[in-house]
Length: 284
Image: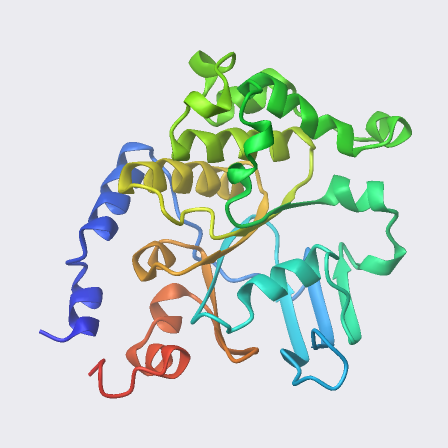
């Protein structure tokens, strides 16, 4: 049987685990498309970007709208632009031209503290910062509140430390040093820190990478609940097709271009996967 047929029939065990665990958690997936009158949380207009002047552009005239209360997968081969796009939305990188708007206002108009209140960016392998592993879960989470100015804090609803620790299921390990936690628990602890900031947009770069299936499912459930129940906007770069199938929306990238965007079942067609991953002849 060809690779794509395994994928379509759900024979990959991880997809089965995700589906079964989602039933147990009573998570409902939103498949509705935004109405024309809905306001996008993130809007990208004619964005161009190259890492150095005179280098080939990663993005050319990219346009995109991302709506609230969605768990969105950025999918594509290595070098397709997933991490770069997240960094541009987070203002870690600046576009050569074009605009990124958050809640209808260009990134350039935000003070750094205002932007920190809007967006949390989770880079790859953030938990490998060994200098932080001696602190406890609770101490790490408390650091999330330091990203805001005092004046801004007064205007924001900031989830309590206790509530976010409970949200990620680490109540019993709140006083444990990070070094004693599993990889999945460490990522949940860092996620709690970002939630304690109070930002409603999460940009996650490979948050499920190198985790056992159990921890991938646990973290996926938390993210899905944040999007569907708490109305967070979550954009996450991933590589796993089976996890992508369970998302609300998939953006499929190839060489800096969005070649498909929308419902996972439609986006993850064999034609699109052939194009995105250059698998012609491997998927039939």
